Length: 101
Image (cartoon, rainbow, N blue to C red):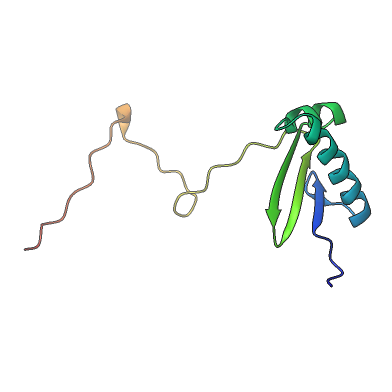
């Protein structure tokens, strides 16, 4: 048998110790038994912004947020430099290569 628990939890990205994670999962499971599908209700009642059950690396993981998640930044394009557009904001279509037969 493994020393690692099958239940894990994180709060704002920080993993909880096994005992705290099991306690949180127990409370979450009891709530969900009575309020099927209402993870948002459990979050509200517990003072969290969100609670999301997921599965990661062979463990059931309960992801808790106590603050709004920061907005995701768009991935940089190319080298990250921003190319200014032409005056008037219109761009020419990219040239097409010749078709091979």
